[in-house]
Structures are given as C-alpha cells and as structure tokens.
Amino acid sequence: MTVFDELVGQDAAAAQLGAAAAAAQEWLDGGRGTGMTHAWLFTGPPGSGRTEAALAFAAALQCPHGGCGTCSSCHQIGAGTHADVLRVRPSGLSMGVAQTRDLVRSSAAAPVGGRFRVVVFEDADRATEAAANALLKAVEEPPARTVWLLCTPTSDDLPVTIRSRCRAVVLRTPSTRAVATVLHQRNGVPWDEAESVARAAGGHLERAVRLATDEKAWKNREAVLSLPAQLDGLGSAIAAAAHLHQTAEAEAKQATEERDERERAELKAAFGDGATGKGVTKAVRAASGALKDLEARQKRRATRIKRDVYDGALLDLVAFYRDVLALQVGAQVDRPTGGHDAELRHVARTSGPRDTLARIEAVQECRRRIDANVNPQIALEAMTARLCTG
Image 1 (cartoon, rainbow, N blue to C red):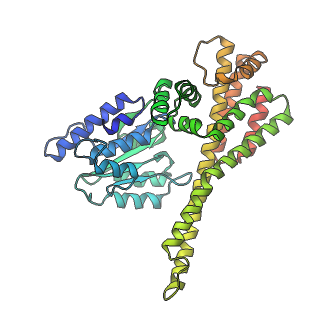
Image 2 (cartoon, helix red, strand yellow):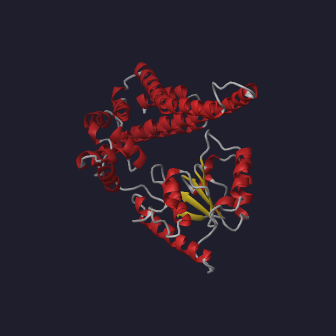
Image 3 (tube, one colour):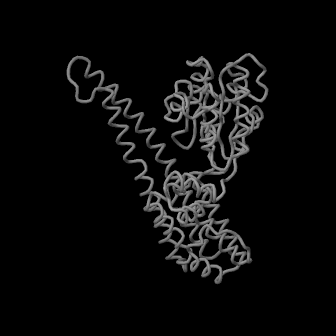
C-alpha cells in the first residue's frame, strides 16, 4: 500500500510518479537521479485528481520509503501540516503578483527535514500575467532542493515559457467503474447506487462523493436536469434562469457561511478577543486590520465557489443535451442522465440534432461568459432563452 494507490484510475501517472520518487531518492543518496526534475505540470479534466496526484508525489518525495502512506511524514502531508510542503490555491478568481512573489520567497527556504521543499500550486492557471512572470523565474532557477508541482486543467492554460520547463503528468477522467468502486469501498455506498452516482458524476470523484452523501446536492442536480423539458417560451426561460441563479447562490452560501464564521472566530481568539489589560487597544486595532484582510479573502473565495457551483450545474445541462443527441442519432453510449429518460425522449422528439448542438453551444457560451465575469443571472437568462429556440 502506497500513497499512489489512492489515485483513482491513474495507473500510468502513478507509475511515472513512483519512478520519479525513486530517482529523487537516488539523487539524495548521491546518484544521478535520472527521471527526477524540479518542476512538474499536472493536467487533467475536472475530477481527475490533479491535486491528489501532486500531493501523493509530494508525500513520496518527503517519505524515506517512497510514499508508504503510514509514516509521520505521509500523515503530515495528508493533514496539511508538513513543514516542507507548501500548498497554495488562489482564494479568488486570480493569483496576483504580490502573492506569487511571497510564494517564491517561501519556496526558496531550505527544507526543514533535509529532503525537499515542495510547492503544490493548485489552479496555477489563475496566475495573472505578472504573476506568471514571477513564477517563471522561480521555475527556471530554483534552489537545488525545491520542487514545483503546478496543477492546471490543460497545459495551454500556462504560458509556453513555464510549461516548457516542466515535466508533464497527464491525468485522465476515471472510469465509471473506478469511481463506483471508491464509493462502494470507502463510503459504504451500495454497488448499484454507487454505479448510478458515478455515472451521474461523469468520472468526477469529488462530485460523486458529494452526490452520494449529500441529499441536497443530488436534489439540486435533479432539478437542473428537469429544466430543459419545461422550456416552452420566454417566460419559462426567465423562470428557469432565476431558479438556477437562486439554487447556485444558496449552495455557495451554504458552502462558505460556516467556514467563514469559524475563521473569524479563530482570528478574534488569536488576537485575544474579550481580553483586558495593557496592550488591548493596540491588539484591537491589529485585529481590525487582520479581520478586514480576512473578509476580503473570504469574499474572493465566495466568488470562486459560486463560479464552481454555476459551472457544475451547467455541465449537468451539457450532459443532458449530449444524451439527447445520442438518442437523436441512435448512438449506443452510456448516458449519465439516464434517470431522466422521459425528459430526454421528449426533448429528442421535439427537436433535431442541429438544435441540440446549438443548445450545447449556448450552455458552453454561458460558461465562458460567467468565467469572464458577466453577471451570472444575465448570462443564464441569455442561455435559457437560446435553449427555447435552439
């Protein structure tokens, strides 16, 4: 059992990373370490486990046994407490140059444990142009024991100057069976239900776990998949857009509210909230500034979470129309929205393949608009109006 056994449906990537970890150990022992390098780029579709693969590799680099999964080093990385592993994810829609420079400075410190200083940079594609330039300098000439692990959906999301200096680890969408096996073995979901949920999640393990364990998340998905068959005019289109908007806002609020409150309470406690005596006034002023910074970060994080929630709902719509197209052209394929056969047949019967392709493009255009910071409700209204007409 190793840390790479936790990667779902990624046998090729696990073998590549295991060999690199062995080469890193060889280098530490004074050998050549052929097969190891200082910068890696993890790419793959949503749900493929880019971050999980990067963290498993980080554990293998820090573990004297190549990622045994049981030693204190492996446990610390799993808990996010390892002193030599820096894990960063942009809190908002972008990563600025000041934050990136701070990260570069932190990465240059010598490893506490004597092995490697590892930076796991999630969503590295969110780095601004200036931030990417700052990152390039670090990736070009890092300290001998610093290793950068960058994670993005595709290699094209990073400037060619950065990706040309990284070794690629390409992940794929896990199979339905692989995801179902995880749900069944780790989460105790009955096999038939696990298979159904894995199919619905389209190979996205994190989403599959959420759908299997959160009844509200499943109900939200069902509501989204019921919308296309209800679109019969402009009035229903506006109502559908409003429903999508309200559901996404509520889901995002639920995901952030409790966490935000806990972080505020912890910050206040750290500054001695409720204390008396000398230095309290100064501490209160410092706490006020820190609280403003925290609230700004939380606001950026909430915006990102909302975008992720919208995107999940829109991807469900893409899957629905993809299944409609399969029915229209007689393709024998696995249908992730097969639980909505009546709605699928209704839409397939009342439209043609060209209409369906136009509707898929309308949903994809809505995704692009929301990602470009267009008001989500306006983008959704434009999309649902097009879904009525094809």
